[in-house]
Image (cartoon, rainbow, N blue to C red; front, side, top):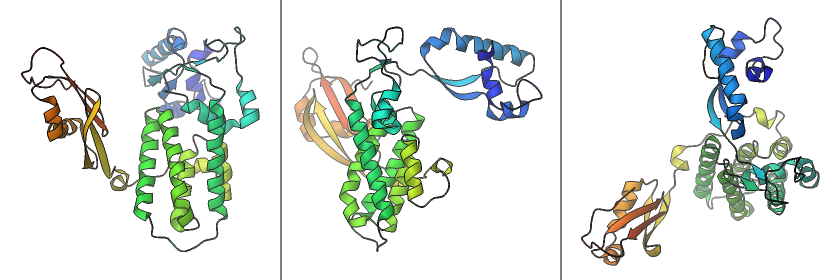
Length: 331
């Protein structure tokens, strides 16, 4: 029974005047996100909802649903037999083994990067090596910035660097909100590679310090131990986990220029460049307006249009039958 109302007690576990603190419950609950395996749906989640609804009917809480949103994570499958890891099967790879060799931050990076949040994934021992390299490179970058003597500002690539930094803040924030952690890690790895082009000219400048400090704060949820250590090395006395999340300028964070590839039946026929963001319908209209694309289509019917936002328009053409140029299906 206790497992079905624990979230009420968690709002203030030291409260002595009753089972839960009404003020704390009013502030913290209902739970914003519940993350757990799908098997909980017919056990814990069912009973937690029942308990909450009874308490609501009795006027003891002000909400009838305990959890506002639910996300089910995928299962980690064993590299031994491809089955879900279980002690009873004897196919478990324990986190302690991985942490002892590579560190907790590398393990976190590897797990987050392994695939979409809700998708089952097989643990790949080789994947941890790439995550560990990323953590080491990130640590080295921040230490070099912390130890670099101050010098005058450079001018080369300044706008490019700041625009790229603000886009990173936007993309990382959106990825966290959307539980797209593999996208987040990929973006961080790409940004770390980008720093290699800029660092020789900018290390020691105020702009470079800003770049590194923003980058460290973005990494804090992903590599908390590295972030805490390097934040201290950068001269901060408070914990990085108490620092403000970086803000971004929407104008700087917007994609400055995009190249859209136009394909017909999967073969590239043309490409065009647009400034800033572009919506799906505009992408299709511009693609259909290209002379080379119109010549390739001729009078044939467009059966389907596949769009990768901001990147690609693929026009799928009917191979036989009506050649009357029916209006394209844009589903």
